[in-house]
Length: 402
Image (tube, rainbow, N blue to C red; front, side):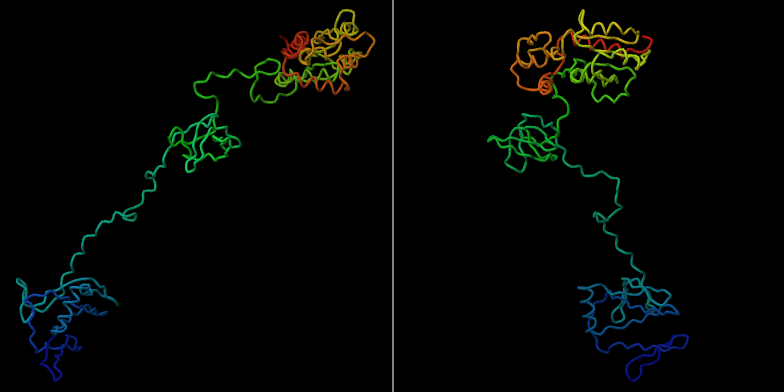
């Protein structure tokens, strides 16, 4: 490249080596006092075909002042880094320019060159949520943990956030019922940390089992006095059976021994009278593992029932009974609040005679329902009936070959 003399308009013609012409304004003839050294931004022009050319414009006084203001208040001037391609890349850079022929110390006198690209400032660390990868498996912020207290009846509690306080009545259908000092009952939802006990925030839960320090409850028992088996699975009915004379006998045995019979898988059936007992036994065809137990009323010496029982002789059949005329008498009279069952003369219908002498104006079936409802356990029955039924249950549930 070579420079030609100034033309009439005050510009020099810069001719590159390949013959193109570039117009460069000449320096101003006006002298403006400037500092010996000033860091001015260089303007770089990128050529899409032949690299980068650099043109430095000597600033006029007005332009110099403006550039100083821009540099001080706004962003530093920009330059386009050398590269080939259709577009340049803009970045911050600076070049030392001397004023009035001066140059910085240690800098050789030659045509201005592209200034070395300044290193980017160190990245300031930000401790925000996006400053580093998120640890999805890291610790969570645990919620406040409150002591768990069973909501037992009688516990003094206070509901947080409300003035309601009182004594726990119980947990009904999942809701806490509290009775305040005025006698009003409040239904509350069991929330975590929703209550206070003795000034401490707690979580009330439905109580499970007996309270700590209380004696263990006695095992539950059936109406017959046996230890109850909780949630016992249903049993398949065994081949052995127990036969009773009438419907009242069957209902009383079910009321007292029903749980035991279901646990053993024994079925109770009614004979509807003992006169055809021998035919029933032959039709049943008892054998080992298929036993038959029979309960008869009024099984005393010389009675009809005793003669019928004597006619049944089979190793797998057992006939027992009680000495009472009817199953009603097997219920203790104290259940009705009377000292003894009335005496009914022979030949008179026994049930109707009993109702007449007790002063009960009701049908026998209706009175029986009333009497059966008062029986709660084996203690309401006479020992003769209890022994006979227990003997039959043991007989029909005995394993074969025992």
